[in-house]
Image 1 (tube, helix red, strand yellow):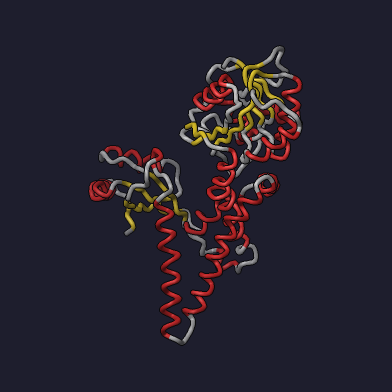
Image 2 (cartoon, rainbow, N blue to C red):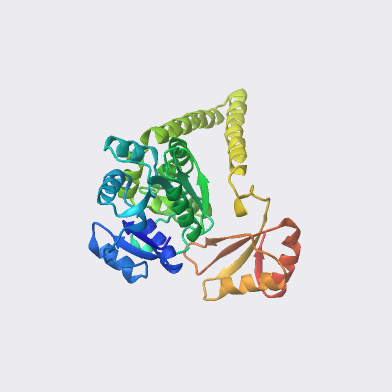
Length: 361
């Protein structure tokens, strides 16, 4: 791939353009808002000048509702040898293109499983896709040349290609992406009218659950509008669990010992099923999550604290597998939770204490 045209310079489009430009591809940028394309160009994502000749690959990075029309227009103009989109739903755009009478042989639907709560070109990053799955949904009619271009794009962005059927992809993202967004927003909505005292008690648990609730509502309405059925199916199952959980909790308030025991059994069941589901979430390097142990270190909110901890862990010969930060409400301090191999816990703890760090049990 020597040339590419990125249509849509939001987070995903700009990030792909930055990655391609950094690896020597000549990238042209287009957007319905010329200022966004200019901003992306100023960031080093390419040029906002129109290509003088047909490019190798056109990457359509617009909201799902506009994918089919944008692709159809680009195909009609013959701007590229191959065409892909990066929308978060795949079945709908393909069916719309067929209804528009488009030849789909030079097109493959794709979806990079990466993102941020922020949007727009300024949120773009050349390393956004590194190590992340990038779904490709070719069909028997897809041209081999276009499939190879799509694979090259994924490789240049240092992502991991995953080939799926379009409708299977939409059912999958309904479960692992779209439903979590709604559930996170529903939990966060409970905080809107909560007493200030309760809000000040927020810890890492509520921060983890509500992190993605900061996402742009308009963007998510567009995404969910393109995949409502599969998301509703998953939420229906969640609603059944919620109803059963409410019933179990009410039973635990009962004066009847048998009802209380039955309620506790119901709560334990949903928690255990949650444990079983969580185990299936891929961990480091895509493998099953390892049973890491946590070493919690007290830190002050000062420059260089994290660097010192990592350096001290490195000098002790301990690899930090994951890290979390829990901030203390209203204080210039917090906890750094270092996830390490269980066999490394004692060595790391001793090394950190020797270097003056305070540990929290």
